[in-house]
Length: 149
Image (cartoon, rainbow, N blue to C red; front, side):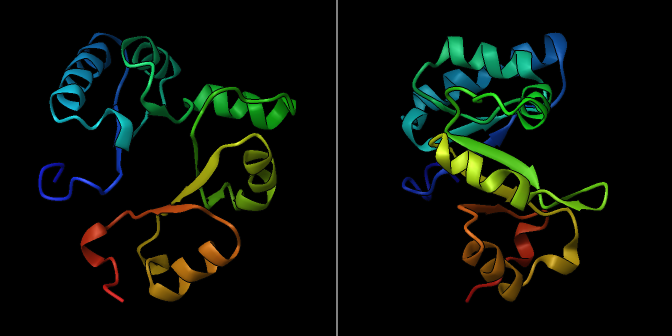
């Protein structure tokens, strides 16, 4: 994908924690450097330690905060820090997340990307509604069903 679409921004999530995630960070960092994709990739992980390690390894790569960091930001009202993209679900426990974080994310200089976890929402109309609401990006649960319009 990186070679076929060199200008397409990549969103890569590091899964897991501990030694496996540490190894994944190292492999991903080397791959991004080798493909010259450091400046066109956002790296995310639910694990804040993996995000911090990636920041050490590739200081220029755009990052999205780990889950604990993001939750603390939502609860505290304190500035988040240097994260290019904040990635959130559209809904969490029945509450729509976008109105709670969109203004803050933009005020702090971060883009807001929303991940979809419900195939019924993956429609052209729904994507347009999210973008019209001010969301900067949509992470599809089923990319193969992404509308081509």
